[in-house]
Image (cartoon, rainbow, N blue to C red; front, side, top):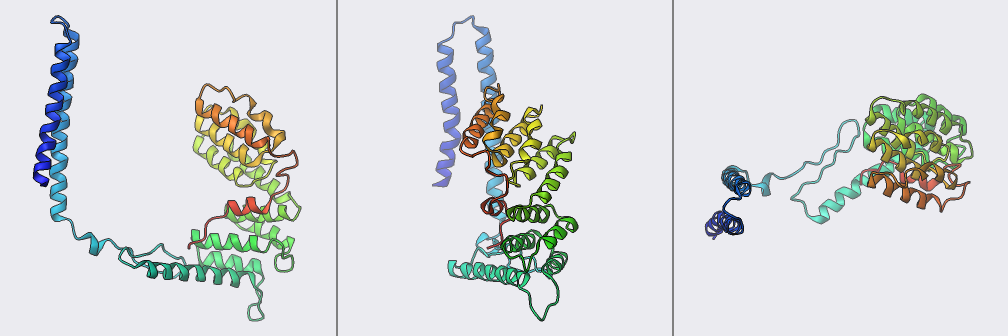
Length: 312
């Protein structure tokens, strides 16, 4: 049956091509040499496509003959690295129930790590900041960074375990931008924007980079702050010569601005680039719903929305 289907496919393409060409020739005058040349070109392209199709089918047939049984080999091992980093791991052959058990185990492990970080104990004299620093040093990786960030947010209202001076110390001592941003955001949540202002000032220098990609990365980082004063730093990039940078600047403005920043996007409403003009109008529409006091300090839902996801 497959052979018959293959034969049909091989003969159908030339037949249709031939019919189309014959019809075209009938519609042309005898002296229309330009159109005839185009038809010849089309015929050659069709022959090339037929040849490529035949090559691909032959390669596929050969691959299928020598490929191992994917039912046996298409698996991903489950493992845990010595440094505590959980590697994404579920075998394709496992039942849904087993997969759920594995996911539950990963979640339980993450929750236990969160609890150990945020709970003071007589058996461990270290402060939260010291435990967090040790945890990140001993367990590098995205999953553990997500756990560390979440632990800071969870203690936003706990001044005894995480006092303001400890937050500031975390911000000044940590080199990871994710931890620094979260620490600054939690401090803002407590009513102090000093760390966020420092964070924005540092990112603002990167907006002056000669490389569009670096300017875009800085805009994404500013957008994650969810803080209105970041909009002032973002504004000059709305006129960037690179369209990608301009679009990211609009997205960052939408994530940080309020009604007082609408004027920054006004000039882009009729931009010749349809993507820019559409996004500018969307930004203005979104910011119209936010009072001039909105985002002048960070909200808890804005922090949560930009946290790294913890492995489940």
